[in-house]
Figure 1: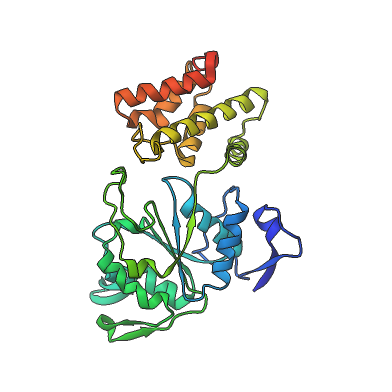
Figure 2: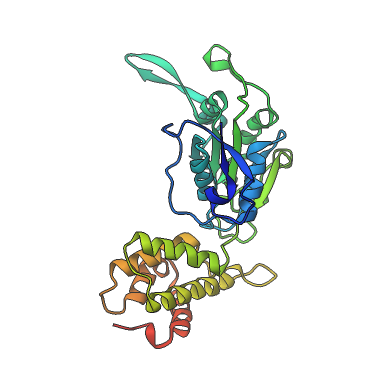
Amino acid sequence: MNKISVASTFGIDAPQAFTVDAFVDDQHPLIPPKTDYVFRKDHVRDLLAFLSKPYGDAYYLTGPTGSGKSSLVCQMAARLNYPVQQITCHGRLDFNDLVGQFMMSNGSMTFVHGPLSVALRDGHILILNEIDLMDPSELAGLNDIIEGNSLTIPQNNREVIKHHAHFRLIVTGNSAGQGDASGLYSGVMQQNLAFMDRFRMMVVDYPEPSVEKAILNQRLEALGVPLDSIMDVVIDNMIKVANEIRQLFMGSVDGVGALTVTMSTRTLIRWLNIMVNFRRAKNVLPYSLERALSFRAEPAQREAIHRIAKDIFGHDWEMA
């Protein structure tokens, strides 16, 4: 292991003497590729603490759609040279899909280890995205693994995979395991209480405006577009539009929102990408917003979204 500076590696405010272990091998094919990412200090602090000393826990990142839950883990792993196994859950995924299955190879049946088996054996991070879409009865098979026990595979001659010291289980979901009272996340299931009791929790909400501005500025630079005074105002207004839409999506204290779509950070970046790509076109702001988000909304909601944007941008909204 190498010691690396937390402050310089993650771009956060931390003492330069504060270091963390990173794997020496930076060529492993399962290390996620690095991308521009703006880290938040509290997220880095909590996730590094878990990766260093899980104490028999797994980790659950919850938050609204597109807030950067999976990318947070992957981009931290990329900087720590930590290999990652990643799979997106769904209602038909079962525990054996994670463990492995027999497949035809060279005319005979061969057991192929799944992402759980490989991560447990080789000491990788296993990320289960959209965990609340998976049947809770299947997820119960992870309970003993989380607590540090070995995995026995009966269908492969009772093969035993020992729990590697560097194995970590991290999951993401929109509901924190409690089910979806809003009705906006189709397929979400309430998870078993005993399973959820094995997790540390982190809420990954949408970034503060200053953080989202840094994210969009980085993206603008990657697209080769200079950040002049005009683009600076455009980006500020895009973020204001996003936050207004989020407020209407989340609703009041009773949880009832006026919109059934929201503008995630991911969608905000998409809006910027399309706007830059068509920046010489007429009415580029409404044109790009439609393709990034509002075409997904019902007509009345689409009109409301564009009214919000027009109010914020003013006369610049339909500029040539």
